[in-house]
Image (cartoon, rainbow over all chains, first blue to last red; front, side):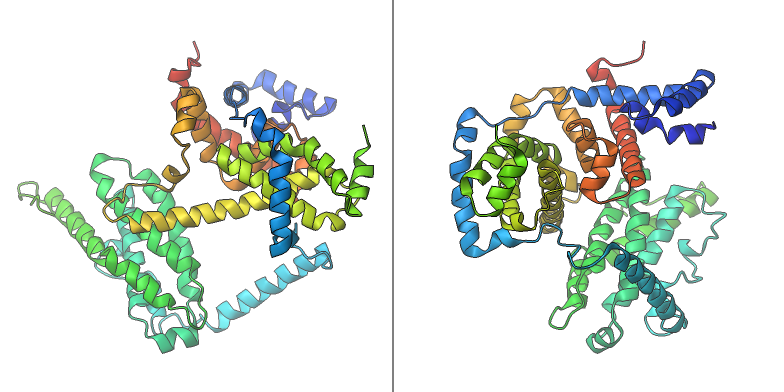
Length: 276
Length: 193
C-alpha cells in the first residue's frame, strides 16, 4: 500500500468504519510509514478537540411549549400554503436518476458547440477585452517569469480591469442580444483565482493590494450572479459597483505603485514617492 | 411505546396526535443538528421548527421504507442550504453598503452573538470559528458523522451523494479543522511535548 492509497482509508479509520482486512492492510502500512502515522495522528487530535464542543440547549420551558408554538406555526403555514414546499426541490419525483446524467451530457455537448461556434472569433467586440492581451503592463509577463505573488496579483488586476472595462462600455442593446454569459464565465474564473491570491497576499506591504482584490471579488460576484433577464438592469448594476468603489482607479494606482517599485529596484538611487 | 411506522401511517391519514408524538420524539435531535449546522441557538430554533412544518406538508409523500429521522435530516439539510445562501447574500449586501469598511469579511457576519460569547469558553469560540471555515457540504458531512454518529453510507443516503464524495468532504473538513485548530493549540494546551 502506498501513502496515497493509505490516505483514502484515513476517514474510515478515524471513525472505525474499516473492515478487519482493510484495517490490517492500513496498520501494516502505518507500521512502516512515519509520515502517514503522524498525519493520521494529527487528524485524530483535531477530532478530539472537536469532540469537546458543547451546544447551547434551550431551557425546559422551550421544550414544554414546543408543540404549542409549532402547531400555531403549522396553522399559519397551512393558511399560507408554506408547508407544501417540496422536500427534494431539485429532483422532481417523476424524474428518474438517469435523466440527470443525460441532461448533463446534453448540456456539455451544447456548451462545446456554443463555445466553438459563438466564441470562436476571439477578437470581435468586447470579447477581445476578456482575453489576456499582449500589453506593456504586468499581464504581459510570461508565466515563467511571473514568480512572485505580487506580479501574479498585477496580472490578475489587469485581466479584471479588461473585463470590467468591457462591461462598463457595453451598450444595452448589445448585451441584450449577445448576453453576458462569457463575461460571467470569466468573472467566475477570476473569483476563484482572486480567493487564492488574496489568501497569499499576507505581507504588510501587500495589504492594499489584498483589499483591492477583496473589493474586486464583490463586483465579480455581482457580475457572476446577476440575472440577465428583460427588465433587470444587469450592466448598470455592475457599472454602479465599479464606479462606487472606484475600482478602475484603484487598479491603475496599484499598477503605478508596482512600476515605481520596479524602477526603484532597477535604479536604487531613485527616490520613491510616498504619496501613492 | 407505539411503533414509529404506525405513527407515521396514522399521521399520513391526518392524525395530528400521531404527528405530535413524532415531533416530540425527534425535536431534540432535529434541534441539535440545526444547531450544529447553523452554529447559533436562534437560527437552530427557527430552522428546526421549519423542518417540522415542511415535514408536515410533505408527509403524504413519505415512503415507509425510509427512516423518519433520516428524512428529517434531509429536510434540515435542504433548509440549511437555503439559509446559508440567504445569509451569504445578506452578508454580501451588508458589506457592500459599508463604505470604508473594506476589511470586513463575510465570516464576521456569522460569528456568535454576545450571549454565546459570554456563556461559552474560549475553546468553544475557537471550535465554532473552525466550523465556520467549512463549506456547507463539508460542515454537513462532518456534523452528521462526528456529532450525530451517522455511518458514511447513511450520510450518503441522507445527502443523496456518492459515498466517495462523503469521504472526500469529510477528509477535507477534518484537514481544514486541523489547520484551524493548530493555530489555537497553544491556548488549548494540546501541544505535543
